[in-house]
Length: 286
Image (cartoon, helix red, strand yellow):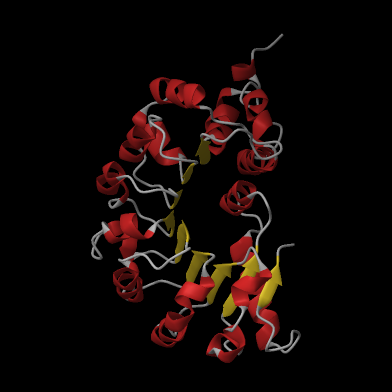
């Protein structure tokens, strides 16, 4: 019987490549089986297996591989830096544990979407050189990034991951910093709207290019008193009740599916079109 490397294509090579890549993107957990079909198929689909890396989670999204600290460390020793650099585009780490993830950030210099929901000054030199379009981090780590660095110059989506129970001392500095981002179109805060509502007007007025401003909502009492703010009529503001498992939401967005950003975009579009009461700014996750 012929070995996988000897199987000749029956379809035009470009069409064959598209078919196998679509299969791998739909069910990445089966990518290792596809890689056995032929050497050329392995070259096409193996990078898809590493396109999105989440470390430290106790579970994976359905049909997607799970990277544990051990499997991640093994991957870093087995895969060449050139392969990882060309493959990895999205990266999430659950907490600040000492996984070997900083090595990944040094190697994978083309990461576009990163979620680091904690502060660790050791990450700053590594993430400031990445070509971010999406960044999730806390205020203090954000302020350690120079405004002129590569990570911020092309940033379109910025999510602050702290649960605000009080105004951080550096909150105003963070506001001034993200107001200076040249390409920012999406901004979100993890709750605590009662502590930031007095600044919302300035943010929306100062960022006419901002498409969506999201505040995560967890309790209805978060919005007491908001009706007197201009946010109740500015269609770009969305109070979003998220799904219980945010990690799955982030993973879906990284794979090109719907996430809280797309939910908010659709909600804003409906407010602008008059399909939703213009005074309704509360969006419940799908």
